[in-house]
Length: 344
Image 1 (cartoon, rainbow, N blue to C red):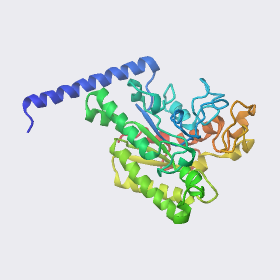
Image 2 (cartoon, rainbow, N blue to C red):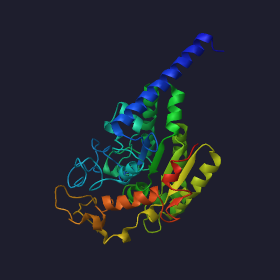
Image 3 (cartoon, one colour):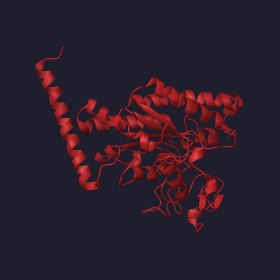
Image 4 (cartoon, one colour):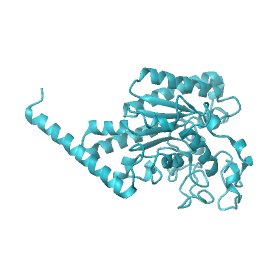
């Protein structure tokens, strides 16, 4: 049983943490204006949302050169886009005044706003995308997040207060594309297609993903958007069907949390653009833009920036539909705007 002295120390630490937290929120309001809808935004994923974590890795999957970033305020940052990614747009819709920064180059009090752990070519499976070099797979992204959780606990001076803070944040997980594009269909490098049928592979991926999601839950995540894999013919349908079913299971099992499914096929509609399936830049053998070569001028008419990644215009459209769904098939069982408003 704790002594009166120990109880007093605990209460002192809690009060100190609350004071530190209040001061930080006050400073945030002074610097950034009105507070966002959630205190922080954490992003896990692949090149669709990478904001520069791959820049210093030995990999071919990095784009810290022009014409990438040609429409971004500070130029090429490592975003696989001409401008803002979908999570940059989501951050704006949530009320953040600046993009969520990459884990690799961010420290200090700014981590209280959230961090982006996404890595180009990464997947649910550790080996996915490694034919291109090193990436930060989802397992490592979660380990990086654990480092952040510990840092936030240190800043707030109390573990319980940090957990309460993290419970209020929004978490975005968009991964699995490279488990197909840079694993299952890369038969010269990986044997997964010889071991599993597409249905079996989807089950294996979902089983591993569900364990990783539970790790995130244990780190305090309570409002989580899970983004489906982009359509590759009918190959990814089993995965997306199982992911939506997983959302139901998670919501039934975890009453203090809410998970939603974002249907990438529905929120991303290339047919809505004048040029739906031709890249805006000239690409190399990897499907990435050739460095410093001219690009299309009417970029808002294009759905594709390079062979795989959407333009900023397409990201604006897809992020808008994920945040506030326009069709019942966009999100399930609710959209992001309703998810972040929940009191859990």
